[in-house]
Structure formats: structure tokens, C-alpha cells
Amino acid sequence: MISCCIFDLDGVLVDTAKYHYLAWAALARELGFEFTPEQGEATKGVSRMASLDIVLRAGGMENRFSAEEKERMAAGKNARYLDYVNRMTADEVLPGVLPFLQELKAKGVGVVLGSASKNAGVILDRCGLRALFDRIVDGTLVSKAKPDPEVFAKGAELAGMEPAVCVVFEDAAAGVEAATRAGMRSVGVGGSPLLAKATMQLPTFEGFTFEKLCNQID
Ligand code: B16
Ligand code: MG
Image (cartoon, rainbow, N blue to C red; front, side, top):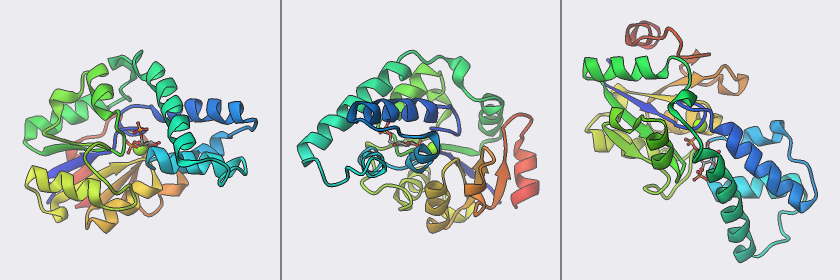
């Protein structure tokens, strides 16, 4: 039985992963090196400070900066990221997402957000998605980053659901691992081979329905 769907945000409902990448790549350029899209994959689903460490490691600069300097770099990256986010509109909700969320609501299936991002609220508002969620767990509410299961365990708990009836939608390997560790099934969104451990794969939400989810996963 599936009674609750828990959605990652970046890369699942909206393509903000590209904005995260652009903002990190700009920081890397300021520091004098290129941060490639392939290297950017490893920052998906990972917290802001852990992402910064990934970027600095890519440039061979992991031990060069004080905690204060790192905080400043992360704040600069976030300001750049917010420049993109503050221009987002509902057009950037990924194809098929809105009808799927609306169908879940109409059928009484729990709809929960489980995102590592501290900017999740502003993105949901910009894209007109907030009202579709019963519960929102974001980076401001959790202390342990994915692959720790905290964000999904908290989402299920707030929604009053057992992990066994929850399905997590994720675009990052760290998120799929977090779902498994939370005792939940998972849908790997976007078709990346890095998501092979998810219970099922979903290249796009276009044409996807709750019935198809139940048929493929239950
Ligand atoms: P912020 P998700 C994650 O969101 C992103 O995938 C990851 O790239 C980012 O570093 C993290 O949020 C923190 O984001 O800097 O906005 O707090 O995929 O878990 O929705
Ligand atoms: Mg994501």
C-alpha cells in the first residue's frame, strides 16, 4: 500500500540543480579553477557546506580556508543562487509534476516535501506549489544531511505515516540511500544511472499517474 509520497525538490519538482551548479561553478572560477558539470553531480542532494567541500576538493583547495572564509564563500554562492531562484516562475515546474501532485491530493494520498535545501520555501512559493503539500521538511528543519534518513523520517512522522507506506521521489544517489535507510521505497527521477539502487526508475513525470506508481512498485 502507498499512502504517502515524499518529494525531493531540486531536480525532482523543479530544475534548480542547474542554478546550484552555475553558482558553484562561478565560485570555482573566482578561485581560479573550472568546476565541471560532471563534478557538479556529486553536490546533488548534499547540504550547502558539504557541497562547498566538494567544490574546494575539485580545485585541490580543501584545507586552504578557515571556517569563517568558508561561511563567506557559501553565503556568496547562496546569494548568486537566489538571484536565479528569485526569477523563477511556475513555468519551471517540471513537466507532469503538477497533474501528478493534484491527483495525489484528490485521492487523499499524503504529499510531503523532503528537501535538503534551506531555500525550499521560497522556491515553492515562486512556483506556486506550496498549497499542494501537507507537510514541508527542508534544510532549516534537519541537522543531518542525506544520505542520513532524518529528512524523510521526519516527513513521515509529521504526516503520521509509517515508513512502509511512504515512497520517496529523488534525483540524487544520496537521497535514494537516505530513503532506503529510512525504510522507504524510492523512485529514481530523471534517468541517471547513479540512481540504479532506487526501487523503480522514472525518466519524467509526464503521463505518470498514481495507478502506474502502484502497479510498478506495490
Ligand atoms: P541550499 P534537494 C539540495 O536540495 C540540492 O540538491 C543540493 O544541491 C543543495 O546543495 C542542497 O539542497 C542545499 O541547498 O543551499 O539551497 O540550502 O535536492 O534535497 O531538494
Ligand atoms: Mg534533488
